[in-house]
Length: 554
Image (cartoon, rainbow, N blue to C red; front, side, top):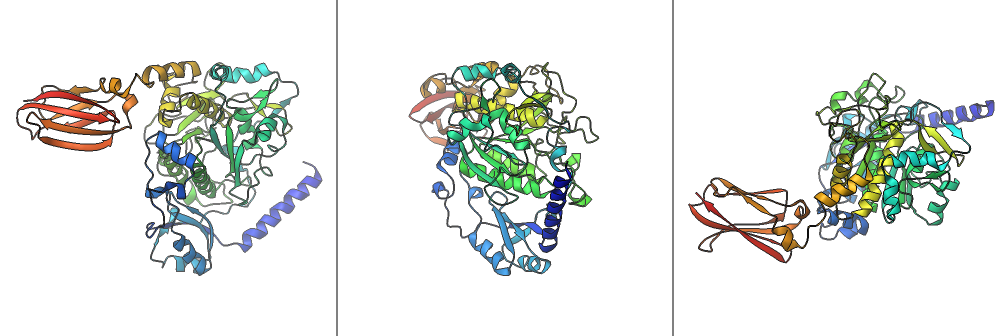
């Protein structure tokens, strides 16, 4: 670093340090309810984009009050006290608030006040430190190569048979991918994103640290990550879903690691949900925070890596349950004392990605599982040792870390979902896992291994593709046992799961013994213990098709 740059860096530090001294602490204030809301679940277009609504509909996910914005009156009441509302959060039902001790005391007196996340202020976010290095690509410097050939980029994609889907025309068209990272420096200039910019496929940007739309003036880690999905410069770089559209969110503070970044991750995920994002890639992870920001009370333990304790893991769970396919790097702790996966890679429904070399063997830097609840992690793996990424100079570099294996898989997930749009996010994850080279013997190093696009398509066609009309599908419903005693069980074909069905249980006389309308699951149980002995009929109706099954109650 030159003397001029050093002076600039220190000047920036002192400017930020001065800002710290002048600002009040920030808290994630939680509210008791969403009473007196102006919104209705019957009118979701008033608070969600049509794309977001359609994503839910395709996966039979209902809109709930959790999707409502927070009560605007609550935010106004906080502002009237003199505190500053930074961002609201609908999933957590609260707001990120900047307040003095006196103002916080007044907030706690408000009738709708529920509590404060962590029971602590959000840590200082502006001091310099090692920052993203712990969860970004490993600490090796990028080695730029001027004339890297296309074959080298192809190798990491060919390992997953991604070109097979590209050749079929599935290149990410109409898929929307959100990337949460530390900034996308030079993404608005580098040649390998020219097509992306020319076609205006960067549809949303926001910096949750600076609280503005400029994500191009901070870190370049997000640029490297994004290149593995979105780059298109034939002969140099072609990403795994280079025709997709993107939402770019800066959630990471380049000056250090703090709990504040878990909250910005939450806020970015909520924004991505509202926008209608299909896939989120997060090459980030959280365990222990920098000393400049926190006390030990902020730090996580392995026991908290249970997929539902940390702020960021709870946020990721919310995102997956809204139908978003969340892909997260396992972490680069394999050779460190921590060793295990980081949050939110610990979430059950998140597709957690470890790292391999080009021989599909475990890369020692990659964090291992299981999570603290005993769930096997990671789920799959991809090239993370010597992966090819785009750099800020517009060329190609070699870098290592699960930060780069994760977006490769995110791109594959996007184009596979594009090919099979009627599947749910979790069904896509299932197919990718089952297609892995290690599927016969999954472990806590590579999970199910490196996914294979060709095998994943075969799995989907064999297990999820429609067998025919609704009438033909209903013919595959199995009733057992017969004769029955305490209950009968309807086994539902996977392709009917999630559909609305009316199920009636009739006696031979025609009397209705039971009636229900609900979404089908794989197993539907009907109690029969209180029925008299005799012949009964189960009538099931889906859309305009129906079927009647008979059984004997002993």
